[in-house]
Length: 221
Image (cartoon, rainbow, N blue to C red; front, side, top):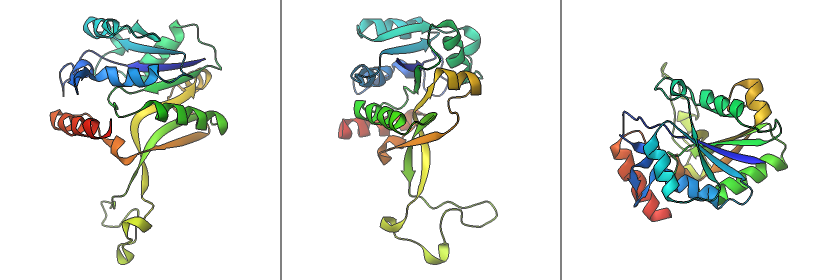
């Protein structure tokens, strides 16, 4: 059993109604849900929300595998962690300890079906306890004390010779129900990494990010 879990609060200070704001003509949530609906190995998709408007928006699309879970108000505040609503749902559901639980962020709409499928295959093939999605960052980083962190500035590498660093892009995290319950965390034990294309690093923190992401969506999808 594989459950994809999407937290989607109604409140958003940076971008009002972010989760259902139109992106390329569809609500933001639509893109992640559709990619998951087309992922054959995913059995169910749970959208955990405190918003009736979000719930109605999802219902209007008549998705076949997607259900809405009404999260508790205390786990839908600005200070509530994502883990709190994950654990809340697991406690209320009939999931088995061995079931795969995949946390998916709606704010990463560039994630495609093939990414979910490849990551789940990697997770199972290598028998990881958990897995996260990353992108490779080719920037040169420095420490506050004036020392270079990830390269030798005296021998500045060419981009094609530079391995860069892996950075979380926040698209998704894979674990088991048992792993989440034990660790109280989205990651646990032997952790694997699924590397995604560099363009999927875009985050939706403000309206300028929205414009950039919409341009990427039109170009890539």
